[in-house]
Image 1 (cartoon, rainbow, N blue to C red):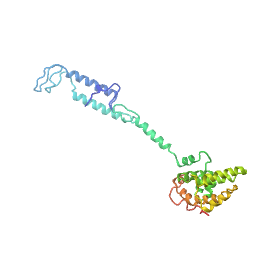
Image 2 (cartoon, rainbow, N blue to C red; image 1 turned 90 degrees about the vertical axis):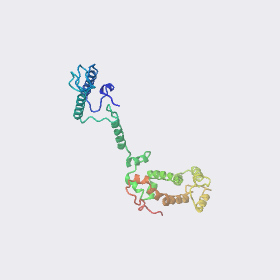
Image 3 (cartoon, rainbow, N blue to C red; image 1 turned 45 degrees about the vertical axis):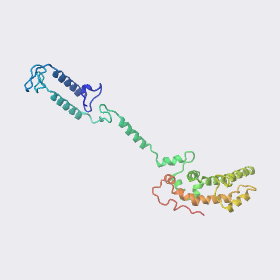
Image 4 (cartoon, rainbow, N blue to C red; image 1 turned 90 degrees about the horizontal axis):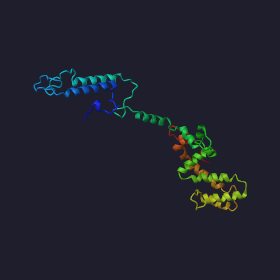
Length: 279
């Protein structure tokens, strides 16, 4: 299905045509329609017709009209091509609309570019881990891979390690260790007794969902110490859990994607090869 320029909606242009070429095309179309509608008496043998609209069906020429329909169409195409060549390079071609230009594609391109520029970097990932506390340097983070003691003595390091243990469903180990450290800071006998009871119920009792893994020897020592709780009631149990985290969880932590991203390690070489060995 085809349409002429006169059939297009008002304000709509064909791609590559200027306003002047559209007006000329509309005028030529109108003239050809008026000339072709005359009531001439043309014969069917190809002779020229008489009158204004004579003999178009017989192949004759139209009297009084010098340009033919084909010639008008040729002129329109020539003007259209010339206008296309003269169009400034700054004008962008239409993206989706065939009759008018729009900026839809440019908006999408800008959105994608902004998304790439705002993508989080490795340093942003480091900052997101410590928004509520201190901001360790890259050197400090890498030192965690060399010594488990340095990791556990650093508050930011303990936070990262605790998040890792939570992902492995063994967070109770570091929670028990931290609770024992907090118990050692107490000076009141009543407070020590109350905290020791809570620690026993949360991490030592076999009925607790967060029971830590202790052997029978250490468990027996803890039970004897609970008769008269002190700040050192859980020393044996704390050492055993610390050793368990060092030997079991720490090597996996060093090879985890979380730590390697924080430490900005590029290869997958043995991150814990230089780590201190458990004693």
